[in-house]
Length: 159
Picture: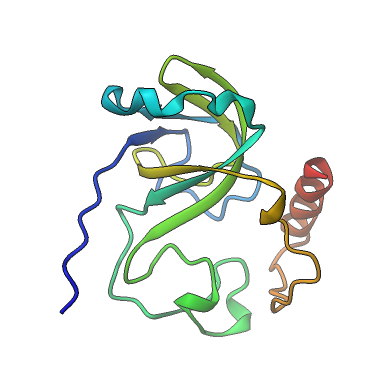
C-alpha cells in the first residue's frame, strides 16, 4: 500500500484574482509570500529570470474527472488529465512565471494565474531544457476573438 502524502505549504499567493473571476488570460503582477522558515531556500533565486510555481488549488473540487473547457464550452467534454483544469483529484497547479523582484521573503511575479490565498507548495527554476519544440497538443479554439488576441499578445511579449 502507498503511504499518504503530506505536503506543507512553503508560502501563499497574494493577488487581486479571486475565485469568482472568469477565465484569466491577461495575468497581472502578484506576489508570493514565502514563510519565514523557508526564506533561506530563496538564496540566489534572483539569478533566474523565470521560475515554476507549484500550488495547491485549495478551493477546487477533487471529485471531478471530466470537464468542459471554460474557454470554449462548445468543444465538449475532456478528461481533466487532458486539460489544465483546476478541478482534479489532486489539485496541483503549475505555472511558469517571470520573477520581477524579490524583497526579503516576498517575490513579485508576472504571469501567475493562481487565486488569492493559494498555498504554494514549491518553487523550481525554469531553464532552457524546459522548452519543448515541435510539441503536439490539441487545438482548443477560444470562444471569443478578444481571448485569442490576448493569448497571441502574451505569447509575443514572452518571446
